[in-house]
Amino acid sequence: MPKATLGLDIETKMINVPDTNYSVELYLYDCSGKDFYRGLVVKLVGNDASYP
Image 1 (spheres, helix red, strand yellow):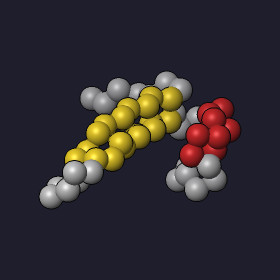
Image 2 (cartoon, helix red, strand yellow):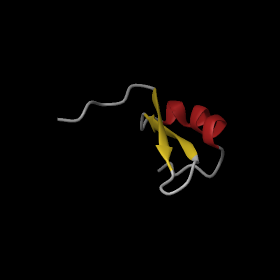
Image 3 (cartoon, rainbow, N blue to C red):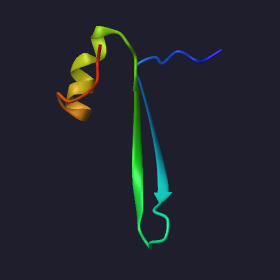
């Protein structure tokens, strides 16, 4: 069973771009579904966040 998110979880991962010397850092934000955290989400990722 999946673990419920309480507040905000942030994960990062380095991904190498195939056939190049480049890499990118991926940030994953997992936010609680409660409206209490909506302002925090907007501050972190802007108004473009997919937030129901």
